[in-house]
Length: 181
Ligand code: IMP
Image (cartoon, rainbow, N blue to C red; front, side, top):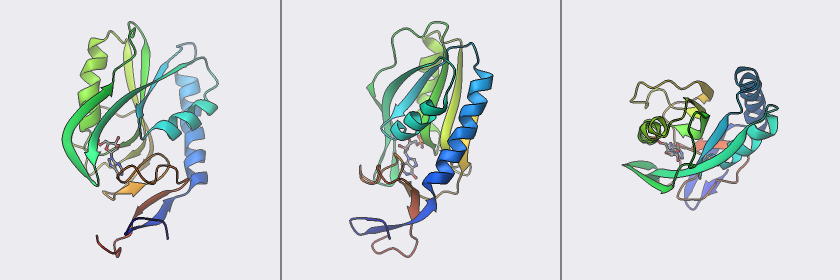
């Protein structure tokens, strides 16, 4: 069973399910952003794999950039968003698609959205691989969602537990009978 130190996880969403869902999301983006040259902004670190696989399926002209923010330490949100790398400089009149690994409380994106709006972007859509609807505390619209999940702590495919587990191909969730949990 996958584990990080003494914490055990069980397989939850397989790599092939993830890739299939990404293909479907990219197909939608290819249609909805045709002739728009969208700017995809991935939120690091967690979204690095999602952005990489999503961009392989995008057939329309687009640009890719990243911003780095963090609100989590271990398994709990710190309730503080830190911006480490800033936004791309010229967003004037750009159609932006923010790409996240997971939206949990929604705090991270709630901090980022006003900055994007101020930057002159003409539109901002959100694309997240995972959404925890029961944890989401805001009202902004999330246009593209890979999978809605329960309030479980998940690791893999970019998502980490104290920086470990990001390279797992499958997404795993915390094993409730795990030792030390
Ligand atoms: P939010 O600000 O509460 O929406 O949390 C968003 C960020 O918290 C994500 O970009 C992840 O980095 C992290 N996060 C939230 N839930 C999980 C989880 O279940 N596993 C790993 N990281 C998570």
